[in-house]
Image (cartoon, rainbow, N blue to C red; front, side, top):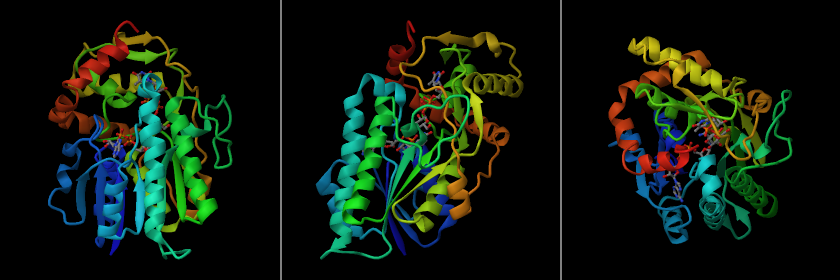
Length: 352
Ligand code: NAD
Ligand code: DAU
């Protein structure tokens, strides 16, 4: 039986990863270490309750004694590190927290994995550390071209700077000690359980409540959207078959300007809810994000050629599935948008 330490898997991508793995693999054990920050939520894991292949532990990836204890208790084969502060806007107001979790936390996991897997100068066999990273480490593109694995790192936001730093430490553990590692760098994900600070769930929630839709700048920044399950499939393939020391870019060639996404959500919800108050007058152009990257676009040729990965969900299907999910999970949305979220929203969008 393969044993996984998965971190940050009460969040958006991680919870989807838990379900993906439970569907795909019978003989596994996943220990899910998550601090349950504002972005982590046990409601996201409700459908895994009672499954002996998944165990939840509340804790911080920066907590060395705790992570060491988990390693000695479970003798993990894989570490898959999803845990992070993940929102660019929050990183602009509080960069220190991003250094703590994204850099120090990753280094702590690397140290604990090395301690457990490197004995008398020899690495235990069939171990792997997978760092879930982001295309944002490459910076911003102009109108042409794509990020490949050899594109130089050029992060702009405190978030992407912290993720790039973590990636450098992961590679340093490979180059210095020979640790078997992979890094995945994926484009923007969308789908169930995404916290409504991110573009798609925020817009779905605001449209439903006839609230203004805050579009940053001219709305023409471009993101390369991937349905979350396709990202989960990529991570699983990389963990199983990725060549040690390699980076794999993940993206589905699905670039859209932000305003296109917002107008698609308006049109879908207008038709689904038969509500004429849902229309494009809800769109409000607001002050741009500081240092806003203009365009991201991934070249996924390497993961396709080496590991046979391809995205299964076209955007037109994925966005309908996503909107359906949010419409069917009103209680979830009500819970995550109560309390602190209201304060966050005020501070981020009032007077913008
Ligand atoms: P998220 O913010 O939804 O979830 C993050 C999770 O990490 C939460 O459950 C939170 O409680 C947990 N966490 C935070 N700090 C922690 C700590 N110190 N110790 C333990 N757990 C902690 O994030 P997400 O969107 O699911 O992203 C997951 C990973 O994927 C991140 O590393 C992110 O950088 C990367 N990524 C995200 C996207 C995207 O579009 N969302 C794309 C590419 C890569
Ligand atoms: O590219 C991968 C990255 O995608 C991940 O590494 C990050 O964790 C994830 O948060 C995401 O970063 P973005 O900054 O691209 O995602 P976000 O949903 O915050 O914003 C998407 C685009 O929409 C971006 O150009 C900013 C814009 N936007 C966002 C919000 C929240 C708006 O115009 N209005 C908004 O209210």
